[in-house]
Length: 198
Image (cartoon, rainbow, N blue to C red; front, side, top):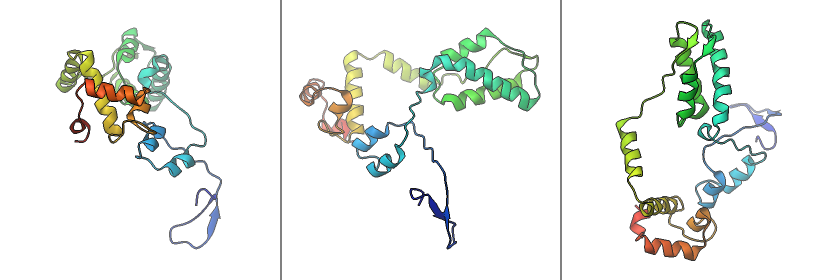
């Protein structure tokens, strides 16, 4: 067992002592997942020895430029292309993108851009264009009222909490409102069990 710092090889009979550290990563809030019953509490407490919270790249715009320079240097060396300069347009493009794929997506975009550069100046990055579906989603969001947005958000939280409204791991706790306030909002917004038990 890793917890006991020992293991046996597959098919082996001898116990081997090891000195290792495990690093586990997720994009979910495990504390909320445990409260909602979607992640084992015992496993969470075994993993949660030294938590490191790293916000997504879209929330760390100040990190984009240094990361970009790091990846430009790395892929310039790997490919034998000498990139002497990055145009301000590239930096602006990178800062205005929402980064759904985080740092790995940035790395791949820079690698592709370096490979396609022919004159030693990174003039452009090949950021994915918004799809028609993305534009429709954005248009749908922008054309909704505040009440419709609030209703959709509460329904989403109720789904994540398996319909539990109050108490530990309930929607009221996640939304940081008293249970009776959430009950009133649910009634006012016309939210029924059919909305979040589908």
